[in-house]
Image (cartoon, rainbow, N blue to C red; front, side):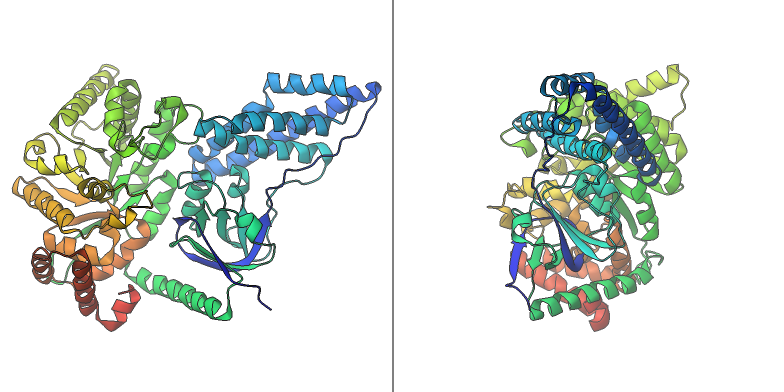
Length: 589
């Protein structure tokens, strides 16, 4: 007998559909019973705490080592905060002092002191410090488990298929999830840049964050459907809904299996034009997915994730090791690495990037790097050092004019001189590019042509700046439309100007990964794309059935149209015609 079906909505952060029973982790505060002790027991209580701390340290180090091997040092470093807490003398002295004064069990004192720290952090405005509450909770549960000899972990070892519902998940809980049985993650808190979101996406587990009151509205054992693409969570689905999503899930899986057959195809159109389809990544260990999906290289390696969720800045050597790993694994294919793009919706406390009224128009990306040259130089040194290990190319984000390129190149030249003096090798012919994601940069391609070796169109920002729409503002996000004729004219102009001035141009924005826009972009003259690795086989399929001459005719017709909706309708019809019924259904057209 089904309970009433309800639909919850959250922020989609990892695509896919999962169907299973819910395992709900309540947000209830763990209660630890207070027990009285005698003064003569103090030494034994302190000894128990020391043993628990030692045991906890061994556990954390073991998890950290495992994560470093599997996912790289960036994730392993997530646990540095907990290791620091283990040796925090102020914290330990406070616990011991209260133990002596109150003469109650060490587990109660320990738990109560941690609660005080968590409350204090939760009241702060700094989002980074607020997130440390999660670290303290995680640390506290581990120590408590070793103090009382009872597992108080929020996540157990699952033996059956499960959708995990929680207020939030600690880094260590997320890291040890059994990916065979956990078919989806839902959290009430968090955003796209939290540990949970990033790790779920990397694990390819469907995930939704920001699903308000999910732990209250869902009961343990409820059947739930998670759609990590739409952000919908359906609880106690009706027979009809369950059937619909089961079919949808089966279709998605069957479609993926068939589309994957095209991953190793040569990217060449029916009339022989070679198309380069590269991949976007955020973390070094995603290289495996890039290779598994047949990418022709990495067209956008975002580096800001090295800086997020930590108390300090990554060192030059830490960055060098990450960049080197990617360059080596992808060689001889190209890796285009983007310099730091913090600001906007990505913040980090150590950099003192304050909140701004209009953050996407504010102190971010190349503007921040030029204002903080020491941080910028550290990253550039790491990139240049890694350039000897493969075809590494550097790209500057959010360029708005020639002055920024000139200043950035001047700093690169200074870094190169430093490396020369220190006799540290680097690729002296390394190519340098600019992301075109502001209308001003798009309009001065001719001025930029002699200052960079290549352009890459970043459509996510280019569209929001062109239409003057904040893409994460729910009230106006409906205006965000890649098919807006004004946006298409701007992209058309970039491609034409780049070709006229013989500057290679590609696209690394989300628009390139939408199959019917991909057809249009081929017709407008683009030959190089960078998209999510998962989409690459589908684009290779489209390349295999299209002739450039046909795509050009479609593009010419589109550029005469004045309605975004009509443009999308036409492109879908044309793509469906090219693919035929069978392939058309395969790519969802």
